[in-house]
Length: 228
Image (cartoon, rainbow, N blue to C red; front, side, top):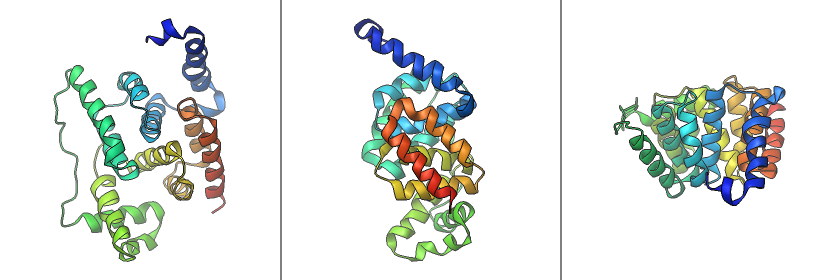
């Protein structure tokens, strides 16, 4: 890293905090695979392609597979939009090709264009409750949400439903300004077994990459969801 030469004092303190102090904090520890999943999603959420490029090789050495990386990036299209997701997809492809990984990877879709709405609504219901099976009828945006966001992406193989809710939480937390959705997905995480303590650990591990304001806002959202 060139920053070791140009900014040695900053680099010393940042690396000590992000790579030693935070991962070893007893009340905020996560398995490395989970920690890197959250960090990659948070870096996409806050739009930092340069930091993502630095972290991805480390993630691939710590339990994150090429399939998992692609699934994280693909799902971000729904929460950041194609415009902000595309640089991360291009970056991911570059790094995977540099590592000799043949692309495209094996397909992971489990729905068709004919059943994506039905299967998406089922995924929504599994996360948020049975009432979501009919939510798609409340306007075309809700129909797209069920068919596209959940039917096209949440139903794919490569990540569990709980892992998909985790990365959604990180996308929303890191980009900021999505507090209503972050509260809802905090509750969705809890419904799938990602409890309050787990989510606080996720926030803690992402804090060096997204800063204190968004981390503290996320904790507030988790607290709100825990009361629901």
